[in-house]
View (cartoon, rainbow, N blue to C red):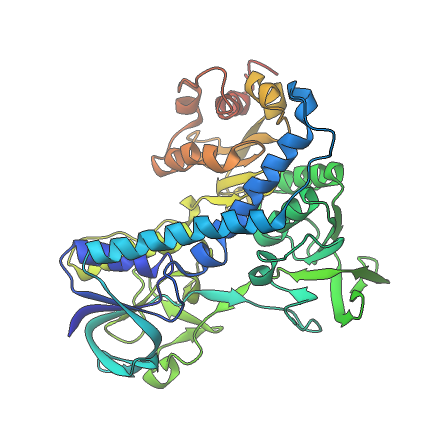
Amino acid sequence: MYDLVVIGAGTGGYVAAIRAAQLGKTVAVVERQKSLGGTCLIWGCIPTKALLEHAHALAIIQNAQEWGVTMAPAAPAIDMRRVHARKDKIVAGLTKGIEFLFKKNKITWIKGTARLAGDGRVEIIDGETQTLQAADIIIATGSAPRSVPGVEIDGTRIITSDQAIHLPEPPASLVILGSGAVGVEFASIYRRFGSAVTIIELLPRLVPAEDEAISAELEKAFRRRGITSLTGTRVRKAAATPKGVEIHAETPDGGTQTLGADVLLVATGRGPVTSGLGIEELGVRLDKGYIAVDSLYRTSVPGIAAVGDVIALDGVAHPQLAHVSSAEGVIVAERLAGREVQPINYDHVPSCTYCDPEIGSVGLTEAEATARGYSVRVGSFPFGVLGRAKMAGETDGFVKIVAETRYDEVLGVHMIGPRSTELIAEAVLALRLECTVEELVRTMHAHPTFSEAFGEAAHAVHGAAIHL
């Protein structure tokens, strides 16, 4: 008998397990993968960002002369065998780290596939046959890549991100379907590795969840890097051929366009992993295939909670992000331990996209703030003005602050440019503390740093940017 059984050892599941164990619970985690860490560590966040770091290193080396560094006569080249070896070593080290934390916190890892059997019972149906009994259960099975009608994934020519992180060589040409975080990150990776890259996006702009100014800046930056963006374009059909992939698309004006590529990467989103769990038989309520939960992640069946990519919150757009899953896992663990917890404010969730240039955002976009009835004023400041950006040779992008006029409260911060995925942390804290623009103006930012752009953007909201 366990106090808690967690199904899935991704960033939601393993964090919930550790926090519950810290609070004195006896915990078992059922995970069918050979390693702990789930999509983020094995297939997503970590391996893709490792590839992006290699792409960034290659970019610096390719411009070595600008830095006064003399290279050997041969042009810099990427060795994918060594790239993958380093990436896999990083992944292995982190997954082993979770195994250590499980042992430290006396968490039992049961290798296999779980199925809910009712009354707190969890059957292991793939692995060592056994039935677990638990006072509480957390479902944290995550998500998996999905395609669109007319595009059948074969894993070789038409692939998902699961295969994209393991391509033995950069394809000569790559078409990416979808311009969310996955799409634009792989566009950045493989363009730097030498592929000819085209992105196809159904909506009118790249990264459509971001502020419109961010989308426009990214499209300009991609154009400079030689990445083609086809927005407002719908793929009707794609088929593998002996030489690659043939893609049939509908253009914004209703016409047709045929594209050819060596590889098509489908990056059109992810769907919940619920198949085989037995949730329908238990009466767990679903919302478009996702597990429906309340603000504290309780399902419709007492004793069963769910967190992460597999859930749907009533009336709330639920982001599929590793740090969101982890935060939800902590809340459930603490609630089950009898601690007082508060629902997450999803307006304060940071979003980081590790493309080149990076994007970091939190809070409302200018359009969202206006749609909610706020009287809005904004301020922007370009990274290119900063001394630190010039030193680093990274001058693309800007910081944009969205604020309301009545109380001067910061409603959202949107960045594109160097270190944006790190700099956004200050903005998250500002929103958490209901900070005003005036307080940001009076917050000293060290010189010379990238963070000066944040301070200057605050000045710009009041029409008083110093260096513009």
